[in-house]
Structure formats: structure tokens, C-alpha cells
Image (tube, rainbow, N blue to C red; front, top):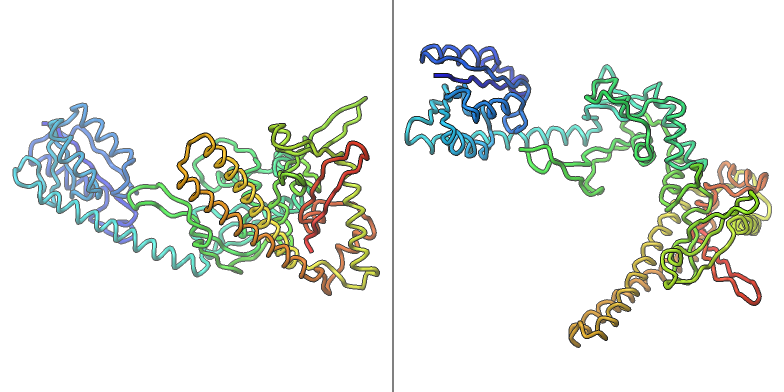
Length: 509
């Protein structure tokens, strides 16, 4: 009779220094047992450093395949837990498929033998005990890892791009002299108005290794070259790691049995400020977040226009989109209502030349700053915290206005559906009242936000005065200044007779 020997060793066995569980000792025990039974060993299958709940163990999968093909008639293991700690696999193979395939399963130490009648309950109890052990072990490991995370210890396999693990303490991050300057360059390019796609292109042109390539140097199993892309750049620009805040516990395994994970809500992430040396200045990081929070599109060269994501149609509230025309080799950029561009029945054009709008906004910024600061006192600057708050308020306002438009459309559709006889009177009245109630709540929130923004004092304080000084020396509209000072710009429709067009600017202060 042919038999197969299966051995498994997991990390927990090594960490607990269980010499008796070593592959060599398991193999010796099972070979001796097979010899006493006068069985021929058709194959020895060994999985080293694999959990008993892992269903993708390479030797385990080969064992199952050969069992189905009838290569052997007996499977020998030291204990049932060596074969699996998953109760579902116990039922699937030991109690269902193995009998169909004519396979006898023996666990020597547990005295498990499927040829002996009446042993099924004992095997099921063994399976439950093994699974309970695995579940307890998983919870204990998770508790230890959470403790380390909350104490600012880095527990990832690879350090984030721009850092490396301290040789003296692998749970501590230190700046990588090779890649930290690359991170600083990425933040600088974004702050100067370059889009994520163009930043990635420039890094590839310079031959700078991407985060994936950097991991490959330290043992990641991905031999192929991976170039920079906008996703990799965006992940770096959003990461608080670079201001010294360690953010972990972002994802959680759904079950201890598998590797599938789910992303946790951001309020459940474990954040530990000042856990390691920052690479990027916090003020620079905040400015970049303001830029990223705007819905923007770069031009064909990967450069984001200063007003990108700040312009809206005064009639429908939709975002303005850019288009270009060429006349005698001269390119002219225009903005027009995005809703009109997608469907001419939704709105009207509201078109304006981008160059004309940029010049107007630049003049208005100069007037606004001159009114607020007739003479620039030494050391006067814009307050970063106030502007950050204004950007968040702007984000909330945009969301509320978007919700208001959704409710307006929903009400219109409801009346149309009711007119078509799709709703009974009671159902129509209930839905209408609910929509109207939501509309009133959104309108009240918008009015409250506008009232609060009007009460705020101009965002100035004693400081370096560098931003205002730069503006007065060279009054050029930059992306950074536009995001800091402007909340939104609404473009009205041009009057056909007079040619006038109303442009309304909402300031962030």
C-alpha cells in the first residue's frame, strides 16, 4: 500500500521553540510508522512557515491533487492540527472527499484513523479545539500588534518610501538619505502647481526608482520594474507619515482564516504624532492638502491652472470646464458650464476666456489685499490655520450645495413621476414632505456657514510676512495663493445686448 507523509511547521511553532514539531522530527516519526506498517512512501510533502489555517499552502495543494489522482491510499500526519486547523477543511476533506477518493487519513499522535468506525466525533472535537486555538492565537497577536501601534512602533514589513528601519530598532523609522529628498521634491513640485501625473512623468524621466522598485531592493517579491504613476505620487502627498505622524491600523483582516482585509473608517486608524523624524514641514504639508482638496485637471503638459477647481456656473452651480481653440497658431483657452457641455438642455454656455478671467482675478486679489493692508507692516502674514479652516469650510459648502442640487433634481423627478401616475397620493405626499424637509435643513446649514464666514476677521497675524511681500513685489497669480485666498468664483451668462458678464468672487477670509 502506498502512503503520503505530510509535515507542516508554522511561525508560532518556531517562536515557541517546539523542537518536537520540527520538520525533521515529524518526518522521522512518520517514516518509522510507515515502515512498521510495511507501507511504501509515495511522497513526502512539507510546508514550512505556513499557518494551519492557510488554504494556499503549496505542498498541501499538491497533496490534495495527488490524493484525488489516486497516487496513494493513506495520508500520514503527526497530529490532525498539522494537516489543518480549519474546521471547514476537516469536514471537506477528512469526512467528505477522502472517503470518496478511497483515502485513509491517520494522525499518529492523536490516534486518529478514518478506518476506525465511531471516531468522527473525536475528529470533529479535535477540529474545534484546533480552530479555537487558532482564533485565540489570532486575537492575542492582534492585541500585541495594536499595543505596538499605539506606542508608536512601526510594525510593517517595509518602511514607507522616504524612510528606512533603524538598524538598532526595527520598529523605529529614520529618514532614508537616498529617498527622503525625493519625497521633499514631490511636495515642492505639487506646491508649485504641478499635477500628480506630470510629477510621476518627471520622476520617471530622471530615472528615480519608484516605491515598488525600492521595496524590491529590500526583498519584495516583484522582479518587474514598476514606474512612477499618479497613484503612487498621490499616496505620498496624502501621507501624514512625512510630518512625523505614524498612521497604522488602516486595514483589518475580515477573518483569521484568510488574508482578505477591509479598510477601516479613518477615525479608527491609530495615529501617533511625533513618533519619528519628519521629512516635510507641517506648513508645507497643509498647503499641499489644500491644493489636493480642490477638484482639478491639469493641462496637456501636466500643469494645474491656478483657478482649477475654483470656478462654478452662477446659474446651476456646476463646475466650469476648460476647452481650447486654435486660430492662426494661437491657442485660446475658454471656460464653460460643465452641465451645458454634457447636455445643452441642462444650462447655458456661461463662456469666458480663461486668460481674461485670470487677469480679472489677479486684479481683484491685488485690490483685496491692498484694502486689507494699505501698508504692509513688518512681519505680517496670512494665518495658515485660518486658511486651512477656510478651505475645510469651503469643502463643506461645496458638499452642501451639491446635496441641494440633488434634492432639487429629486423633487422635479418626483413631480414628473407623480404626474405620470407612478405614485399614489399618500406616497407622493410622504416623499415630497421628506425632500422639502431635507431641503430646508441644507439651506439652513448653508446660511449658517455664510453668516459665520462673514464674521471671521481677516486672516492675518504677526509672522514672517513672506507671502504678502512676495505678492506685492511680483503680483502674479499662483496656484498656492489662489487656493489660500479664494473660496469659489461664479461665472454669470454674458448679456447679448450689452456684452456685460457678472463674475462673483467668494473669498476664503
